[in-house]
Length: 131
Image: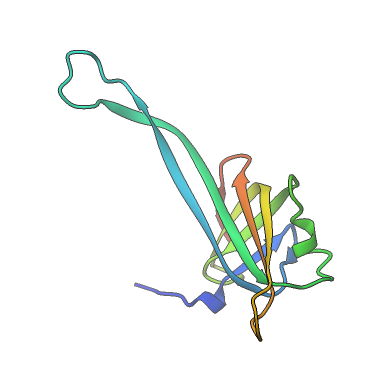
């Protein structure tokens, strides 16, 4: 089994790499629909709608015009996530993402200023292999 380290991953907004990414994540979930009837002694569930969401955490960069600056609140962007690296033969996930929040954290002392973006998918993610 192959394992990967975080430094191998990358996040792109469209065709531009987002600068100074510290970490990122995405989560896929499946909702459920309740079909329990009055005679049931246990809940009866069926698979409902799926959803995808995630976040990107970066060191603050004030001039990343093709990366961080494209992630404005309410914008719809094409995020391309590379969990294994962005070279031939590696998996990538492409998501039409709606940016739902942006936060800037400026810690006391010598801590680095960060930007944190959250997003929700506008449609199903697309999985592919880099050719």
